[in-house]
Length: 148
Image (tube, rainbow, N blue to C red; front, side, top):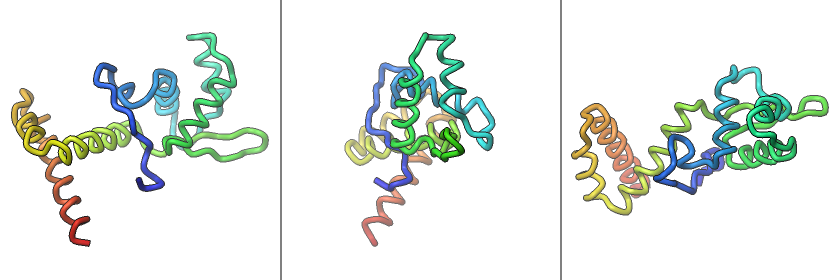
């Protein structure tokens, strides 16, 4: 795995949205961070104050979650005075695109024929077209890697 790639190693089909690849608290933290201007950065205290009203969470739990998200290459931490300021490495759209691409690649590598048939059978033509484009990109990237 590329050091800059987000660590997406779990996929839960029964969960909604980004919770398919992140835990509930991780997803909630990322959604809060993505809702703010990326250039401003976010402190643990910023996130804690919002989350505490919702779920009476401990400050250290928020701090540990944001540290874990940084280790997963989803946040970048910069020390400023006595606090760390966290910045999203990817926008929400970029993150979703990466995890969809990663899952499609895994399916394509493991189950090429059934993956193509399933994509062709998708009821929404725009979704099917985008999925075919992603599969084609995966196939081209894999062919290029094999020829290196």
